[in-house]
Image (tube, rainbow, N blue to C red; front, side):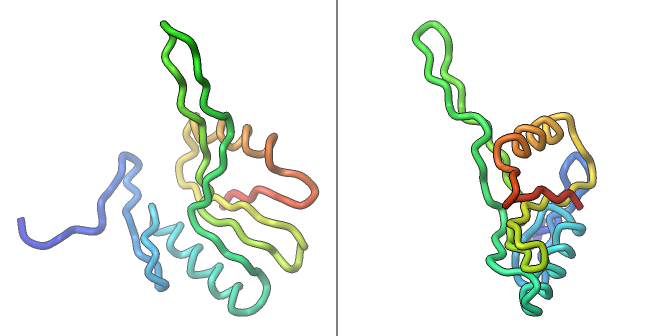
Length: 123
């Protein structure tokens, strides 16, 4: 097999896709949204754009033998930015398929991190 194939598909048929700014995203939808957010950043409508920000939902659990230790449960947001119009931090996730795991993590995230200063947006 010659060359490197960068467009790999996952089990939901999403293809790894680069955006205009050189980031590799998990889907075409996410890459397009990144490009939109960069335009909003240049226009001054948002600031502090971050990609793939990890949040801890549940800390790691350490147990005494014979029970195995448990790793922390985390959620990785596609984008985090400050919306100058809303005056709030926005945590955004681009989803095509909403899995059971994603829905549970979204609920934990909203419960733990969303308040009057932080909102969750699903696109």
